[in-house]
Each structure stands twice: as C-alpha cells, then as structure tokens.
Length: 178
Image 1 (spheres, rainbow, N blue to C red):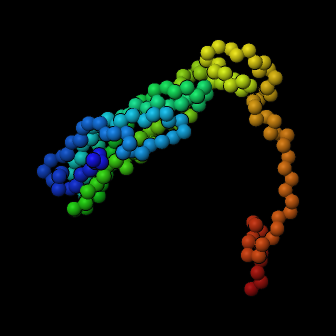
Image 2: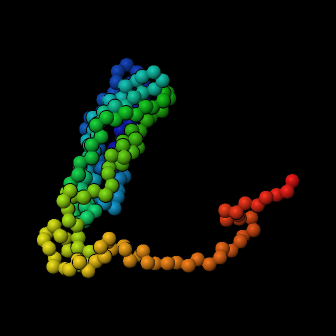
Image 3: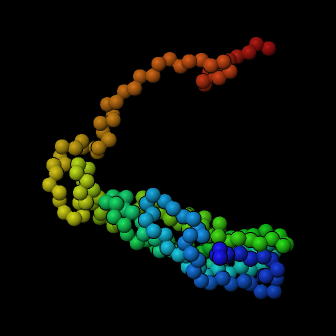
C-alpha cells in the first residue's frame, strides 16, 4: 500500500487536522551523488483552515548518511526543518498531497559540499590516501603552489573566424535604411 499524507477541505471544516509519525524514505524520491543513505522522515504537522484556504505548519526531520566532499567517507547528518509554512488555496473536493511540498523543504534544507568535520584533511592529490589516517609519505611540494588546476592557466585555445549563418546575428546589429 502506498503511503499517503494528504487532506481535503471537508476534513478541516470543524477542527484542524494533525499528522504525526514517520513516512518511509522512498515516498520522497530523494537522491544525490553525496547522499549515501536517506532515512525515514519524522513529522509533526498541523493543517488549519484560514481565510481563503488552509495553512500547513509544523516540522520534519530525517537522518541521512552523506559522503564527505574532502575524504569521501560516509558520515551521519540530520536534516531538520523546524518552521514549515505552506498555504493551500481553497478548492472543494480536491485532495491535497503534502509529500511534494515536504520533499521540496527537505531538498532546500540539505546543504551541498558537506565535509565530515571542519578539520577534515581530505585525500592526497598524488596517491589518493585518506590524510585523516596519517601522512601517506608523498612529496606534495612537487604540486603547483596554487593547486592542481594551475596547469590550465597556460592553456591557450585558438578559435578560427566564425562562420556567418544567414539569419543569425552573432551579436552584430545591422542598420536598415527606412
């Protein structure tokens, strides 16, 4: 059976509707290169009728395992959205699915380029050893001072003259006599 988290305006005519529990991770369809594991989503939500619609308030949280951008190790990271606010315009006989809005909140609260620790030393650019485990013995003084990408500074690419296509301006404007 598919997990549903939804409401309609008939349910909130007399009193607010409370949702509390845990939603399976799979119903949020969240994936990322740095995301090793996305856990179930805990939630406490309240849908109240207000003038012209309904207001969803509450909080959600999920435990994730992320991949460190420096050393590539997995580490636990909690995503928490404490002040949810969503407005739904009143539409009689319509079922409002809350999952898409909660998914968006989770994605917006998920930072990118996370390191496992502020002092993470990352990987050796020469041999790939994890420098958090100790020095690998490589002579990193052979690397360019500014980083591994400095070699690209000397790269020069020559571009020949642009071909003119009829009807394409390539940034040139033509004056027409009137």
